[in-house]
Amino acid sequence: MIEIIISVFIIFGGIFTLIGSIGLARRPDFYTRLHGPTKATTLGVGGLLVASMIYFGTQETISMHELLVTMFLFMTAPVSCHLMAKAALHLRVRSEVDLPKSDK
Amino acid sequence: MLATAVLIAMVMVILALVLNIWRVIIGPDVTDRILALDTLYINSIALLVLLGIHMASAHYFEAALLIAMMGFIGTSALCKYLLRGDIIE
Image (cartoon, rainbow over all chains, first blue to last red; front, side, top):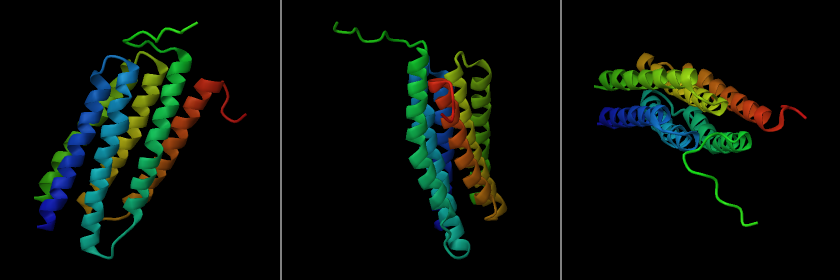
């Protein structure tokens, strides 16, 4: 039973990791490309880490290393996404839509 | 069953790594390359976690934690360099 739960989490994580990277490879411009990796891939790695936590919880005493990695990834992914978007706006990277008109 | 699931997920993650490397090579702008490198380290953490389950060994988490920290520092340093022209002002 516990093996089925772990397998479901592992497949879930693998599928989301792949979806995020397909989004990175296929989207037309940088600002849409930001969405795939920073959301789907983080969720996928989170699923894999939950699976690993359950697996090592059944093997021996429950370990908290995975929780540390999960917390760290979930905290840093939005920050790095924000930094990359800021850098792209600063460099005026090409976008599919025009910038909004200024009122002045 | 668990071994099969781990193998399937490994194939998916390796495919994801190949797609990321493709984006690092063709990426039209420098920010695309930074984003692809960021995704590359997150996917390598996924591969290390899967390897840890496959080998039933808990020694891979220190490596995963180190990659997570160093990858974030690398991404933020590159973005800071693009934004300000300097990393530590």
